[in-house]
Image (cartoon, rainbow, N blue to C red; front, top):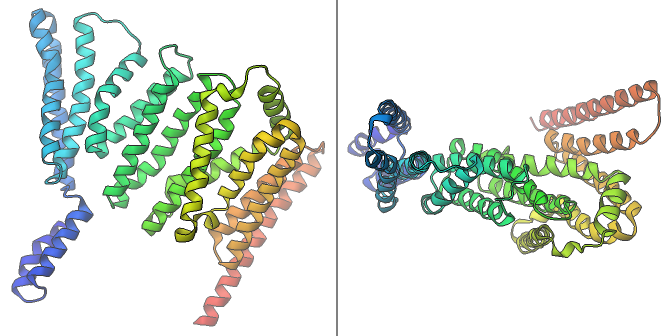
Length: 437
């Protein structure tokens, strides 16, 4: 793109384009490239990191010889420098994206370094979880303000580290509220990133990292209260949101066809429904553990979180139906709605009916996408539908007490069926293309 910009004045002088067209092309290049000179930016970032590490090594070598006041000043220096750059970047946010990226990233690194140095100077003891919590807490306003790509990458990794380390280890210092606001910051920052940027190369990795981090963090909510069984319902709603967001991103740019939100949402839902296609999850996990205990589950924060996510998903899908038809392009949302209703009604009184319903939902989704793939001559949807049917058959076959010979013949049959259907669609598409030609 920089080469194209270089030739624009020459094109104007030779009359190939007008000056107005030159301005429009430059504006398009700025929007496309985000005004980030890629090689210069990365080299400058690497140079800044190397210089910072060198300064830190020199200070660390002479740390014991410094007076207490000098140590305190040096401890606060990274945070002061990073905050100064961040404020400068905030005022120049719409002038140069390089300052926005560097300001947010350097402030985040500076805050983390200053917190660690101050705790070392005053011998403040604490766990890694408390250090990460303090670091992320003081940096959150900057992330919400600037929404830098590099700082968001570090924020997602550190917040997931904190949530998993504290949540899955039953840390008493972490409450569901702490996990909740970090998850909300993730959602808000990624949303801003996708609304402001259009570069597939820069944004596509976040479509894989975000659902992974959010899914791991959301799972810790089950460890901070009673009735962890409600996590299954919450995950169903979260996976539905992943599908909706992935579909909305694809409608904006076809290059996002393989975005991670769509893959995580659909594959996660396949795993969830596979688990609930067994009697154990409806009888022992839902009916016995959730409904036959004395403490009411409506007092659990996870219950209200799951209900709000599910209600919001259904409301959003209903409002967007006429304009985008998401609910028809993604029948998984209908399956999630039925699963949510059955979770409370059938799970309490008729667990076997819930198991049958889940199997029917898997069968329906498999047939729908199988038909969609055959009619549209799409191997992607064809194999996705076959995947639902194959997983359903494998789950039901595992319930039977058959010998190794029967199991081997069954898997051979399923594999052969997948191959035959794919060959049929490929030949059908080839014949139509040859007929058109």
